[in-house]
Each structure stands twice: as C-alpha cells, then as structure tokens.
Amino acid sequence: MSDRLAGKIALITGVGGGMGVAAARRFAAEGARVVGCDLDDERAAATEALIRAEGGEITVMGGVDLGDAAAARDWVDAAVATYGGIDVLYNNASTQRFAPIEDLAVEDWDFTIRNELDLVFYTVKAAWPHLKDHGGGSIINVGSIAAIRGVEFMAQNAHSTAKGGVIALTLQLVVEGGPHGIRANVISPGLVETPNTAPMLADPPERMRRVVLDRIPLGRHGHADDVVNAAVFLASDESSWISGTNIVVDGGGSVLG
Ligand SMILES: NC(=O)c1ccc[n+]([C@@H]2O[C@H](COP(=O)([O-])OP(=O)(O)OC[C@H]3O[C@@H](n4cnc5c(N)ncnc54)[C@H](O)[C@@H]3O)[C@@H](O)[C@H]2O)c1
Image (cartoon, protein in one colour):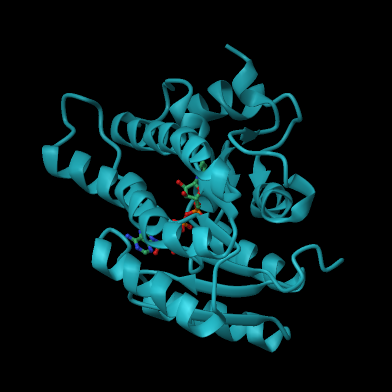
C-alpha cells in the first residue's frame, strides 16, 4: 500500500458488512485512522480485531443504529472527541426490503427509506459542522445502479427510491459544501459479491444470469475491492477538485439498455 490516506480521519459506516470490512481494511492499510460503526455488535468487533491484528488504526462502535438520528450524532461526536476532526465520511451502511409494488407494505417502504436514506442524512448532518470547522473534507455516499434503471429480477421499488434520494441529496451537498471545502460524491455499484450475494452468485437464477450477468461488458460480477478502489480515490487528495460525480462501478453493465 502507498499511504494514499496517510493521517486522514475516516468515518466509515457498516464496517461489519461485505464492502464495509473491505473498505475499513483498505483505508487502514492506506494509512487512515478509521472510525467505524455497525448495527451488528459481533461483526463490528470482528472487523476491529481483524484490522488491529493487521497493524491498522481503527476504532469500531457496535450496536449503533444509524437510522436513529441521536445515535448517528453520538457516533460522529465520539469520533471527533477521539481524533479531533473528520476528513472523510463514507456512508456505506444500508439495509433494504424488496417487494413488488402491490405487495410492498408501508412498513417495508418506511424501513428501507430509514435504513438507506435517512441514515445518510443523519450522519451528514452530524458531521457537517465538524467538516466545516476542519476546513472541509470528503463525503462518499454509496448509491446503486438500482437508482438509474428498473430491473426484472429484483423488486427494488423502495431500494431504488432510497438510493435515488442518496444521489439527489449528494448533489445539494456539493453546492452547500463547496464554499467550505467539503466535497461530496457517490459511488454506485452494480452487482457485487459479498457474503449476502455470494450464494445467489454461486447459483444465479436463470433470469438474473440472462438479464444481468451475461450482459456485463467486462464479463464478471463485482468484488468489494472494485468499489473500495473508487472510494480510496474519492477519499484521497488525488480527487481534490472532484465533487458531484457519481462513479458507476458495474463492469459497464448499466450502459446496456
Ligand atoms: N452488494 C451489492 O451487490 C450492492 C450493489 C449496489 C449497492 N450496494 C450498496 O453497497 C453498500 C454495502 O453493501 P454490502 O453488500 O456490503 O452490504 P452488507 O449488508 O453486507 O453490509 C451492510 C452493513 O451495514 C450495516 N447496517 C445496516 N443498517 C444499519 C443501520 N441502520 N445502522 C448501522 N449499521 C447498519 C449492516 O449491519 C451491515 O453490516 C450498501 O449501501 C448497499 O446498498 C451493494
């Protein structure tokens, strides 16, 4: 690794999950001081132990429900109290529920918006004054190609709406953050192998293979590091004049109609 994030204080949400673990490991390996969180206590502790064993600097709070505004603020404030500021806020965490529009319960809709969109607003709102005080920073919000097209194989009504909201919010953050040196960008992954998706990818439904996997120009599904590579760039000073972009990391799949 090349210390591309040397000394940066990087807050990463959902570090117990597939891409979150990969992000925390890579950010720490690149020299960042990582402050993570996750709803899941055990997975949060496992990520912290793993990265410390590798010599990385990381603190992870478990049992943090970012869909609760006060809990999100407490996590951000604890990071600032420990490290004195924020350079990077990487909103990776999310949970969602899928159902066709006729079957999608209001409760499932609300759950998804809370756990994919509200939580981004809450961490950004909590971090904003600290980012301003610190002279700026980089906000990286994880969207999805779900926000830019409908699909036949997944009933993504609430999920795509929430991720579309993440992208729209990011655009306004660009405008309001610019004068303070705050950058905001989105990474929109395509289908990425994580512990959640691995069983499905090992034995993909015929329709998913036909509609998605066989139509990825670069010929394979994604891996967590494909996404994290983009995040390292957006977190680093290499992207210091980039704000408002949406980096689509999907092997080129979404350009096919
Ligand atoms: N895996 C894919 O194919 C794919 C594709 C497009 C976008 N994405 C997006 O990438 C990001 C990471 O995805 P992943 O596959 O690694 O997910 P994951 O489910 O493996 O990990 C998400 C983590 O976030 C945590 N989390 C969820 N809700 C939380 C909350 N309210 N408070 C705190 N922590 C919470 C979970 O406990 C989990 O550890 C997500 O935003 C997801 O929507 C994933």
